[in-house]
Amino acid sequence: MLPDRTSPPDGLIIGPLICERTLRTKIAAELDQLREDMEEIGVQLCLDEEVMLRCMSYLQRLDEMGQRSIWLAELVRSEDPNAVIPEITLQSLANRLRDE
Image (cartoon, rainbow, N blue to C red):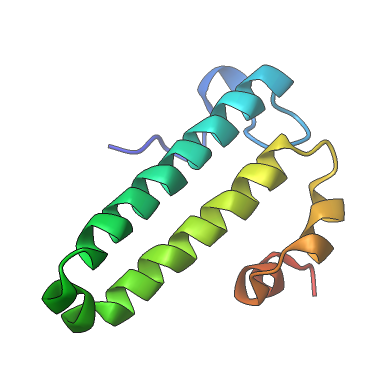
């Protein structure tokens, strides 16, 4: 069950500029681990040519999720996440994160 987003625990507001750096580093490390796990799943699925051909669109989505995870980890690590947004090479994610 996910925590209620309307009332942060103990008054803690989760945000890159508010959380302790240590917590942000841990969150980023978890995102990195998720990316590695997704990549390994993708590699294992690609070892079976039939699965790879049948599931190509899903494998591509898995790859995109890994790329998103990389950039989200960078944003969480950054002291200035807005400065990272122009560097994001996954355009769909960059567009969603812009204030425009």
